[in-house]
Image (cartoon, helix red, strand yellow):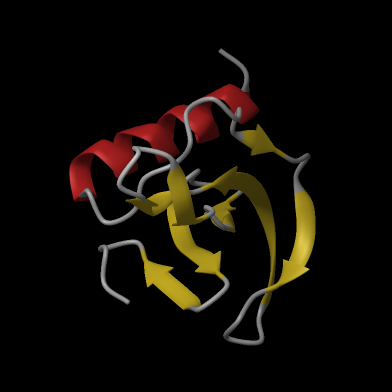
Length: 103
């Protein structure tokens, strides 16, 4: 297993362990090459970034059973330390999710 695959597997394990956020399994998780990024704390670090889309939620149906509205999933980005392959945090449209599952 190469490093990118290992990072993706670590993220899948984190999803199952925390049950904080889910991803759309029909859209593959995409791990970018290792890159130097400025993190939200202002420090610069080598990281792997995995992009994924959350599941669509809140489907509403009319009396005939047709979908009348739903919230489409959003794109999120999981940041992993390039040395330890540990999840640093997940960036989403409405803020961050910490590695312990808190917001």
